[in-house]
Amino acid sequence: MNKILIVTPTYNELSNIEHLFVSIFERHPEVHILVVDDSSPDGTGDFVKKHILYEKSVFLISRPGKMGLGSAYCDGFNWALSRDYNKIIQIDADFSHNPKYLSNMIETSSNYDLVIGSRYINGVNVVNWPMNRLILSYLANLYCRIILGIKIKDFTGGFKCFNRKVLESINFDNVKSEGYSFQIEINLKAFSNHMSIKEIPIIFNDRARGTSKMSKKVILEAIYMVPLLKFKKIFKLL
Image (cartoon, rainbow, N blue to C red; front, side):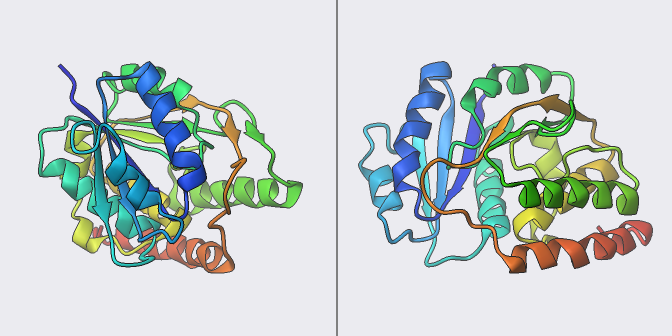
């Protein structure tokens, strides 16, 4: 029997987190959810602690400040590996990743090591993004495919299901990326460790509530990190 953990990093997601919990548990009451909260000023972490399922099906890592997306996932993955979960799913807390895709993702993971919910596997499936951001995202993923030489259509997407052995194959102490480049690095490490990867189509809806965490720093990191990851791949430094 699968024991499944869903990991979601949060920073000021109080307006979304309850809706996310309800939507997930309505479909999959058997899963557990781990929130990795960076001391959200809006009380996201406090809400989680007061939830009726806290420390039963809902768990919390409370971090001392805003430490970044990549390190949040690393902390969440290490937490999962210290327990007996055999499937670990990452999902955004802002509901841009619809939990309705979880069933297909979990089912597909029976045949593949890493399943990516892909915005670009069947054309472009993004709702409520301005054209400039859509073009930037599409070109960024094309850039990754060309530089890294891997046929993943959505390198930067954050909706994924890992079988346990994928995460066991990664030394998270060596993962330094944040933001979109974290997603790229994890995909590359999985590929380099000979894990099977499958993209399934999703429709990505931009957040309806809360504030986007996109910044120039995140974009610039992704630009310079891709050639660096290519270098590490060539010289087997991943």
